[in-house]
Length: 277
Length: 283
Image 1 (cartoon, chains in turn blue, orange):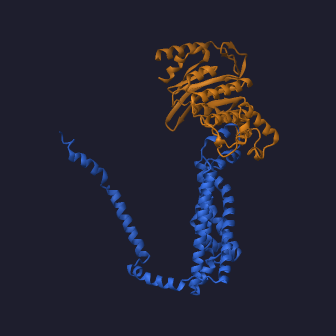
Image 2: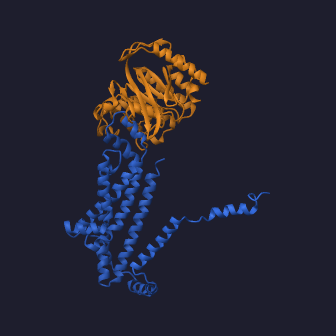
Image 3: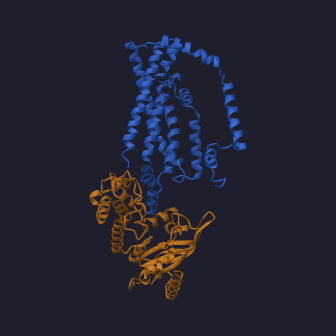
């Protein structure tokens, strides 16, 4: 038996495959990653003492917040605020999704616009996404005044930033065959997009739109913190006035609604997209 | 096999040298009989195509007359589909020029190109139907070259005359009863027949077919080829089709163009060729 065929070598072959020595550059990368993590922790004032002292304070808050405020008048007021929150989310998401389609057509490469237009629109969409929804709400509060309309506009813009990009990506990735067949018969670009590209991307559009709706519902619950309507203002007032039972009621209502929307959205996604073979 | 190919090429070259063709008309031997003088509908002049630094084919020249069915054969990677796309102007040639219905494709404006393509149909290897739309809507899309705009986007919006034209096209492929069925609920053979209906609904002068039965089982493939050529023969349509099936090339083609080593190595009437001649292209 030769050395190469020895049982030790057989074992060593598998052991070596399991552990691979990192290259010098990889090692430096890992080390740099660790340094960055510690730098960030130092920057946020990470403190084990504070973490250790948090549970008693949290227990104190919980004791003062429970039971939640279930007074019928309070529940009625919060219920209407939640309805307003959902109105902001639905109206904003639907308008945002509709406006995202033409924006995405301009952003998608090789459809109806040239590369310069694609790049400019994509940069615009990146800018929209880079600004948080709460900041857009502040901008629209200044522009149109306090209230749910400012919140809806913030959701519209936020949805365009999200759906515009993903719709464009979906259209770029869709099967090019049907589009080529229509192009070969002399169809215009707009006709090709309307008859082949958009129908081909529809399942992805529906999925993205449902995610946008979930995102809009989550966002709309906090827009009230800056005066842009919805139930968020009740949360802020509850904490400002140390009315923790009412604040807890708001938190539980938000949780129930957001989880409910996610469940309905997941069901709708499976139902609609699952029909396609 | 190489000898067979060489002798075929030399005999074909002789045949081509003897041909007396006027600049815009061809006298073709189609099958056993001589066809009347026909206008040239597709012409490739020294066409070459490269992708990056990779040459696909070079110096490809031929002229195809009206009503002629031409089989484009060759091994995988010889550029049959690419040549077909160059002929339709879907991708640009690297050098040389293509003349489609008397118009040079690389000099045509967008509008001229669309007008030219409105007289062309395409049947692809994969039927390329839009899955979520109805069969009728898919067939109506074949009229978009001649009738652009929203009214031909869907069967719900289409004018009655166009709906009737589309239904007639579906009747010709035997699928009128499936008009309102979703395209993704059809079998492979049915889908390809709908693709044929979409290609012929606009009464095109030229039909391109890129391996139209490659994704079908032999029986369904034979049915599709029979149907396709029965329909186009009735209308005197010029056909260019690619195929790996030698029997199909000889049975349905009037003329066979063979691509090998990046060049047209064979150009002959199907009647003058045997299966053995074509197999040489795959060595």
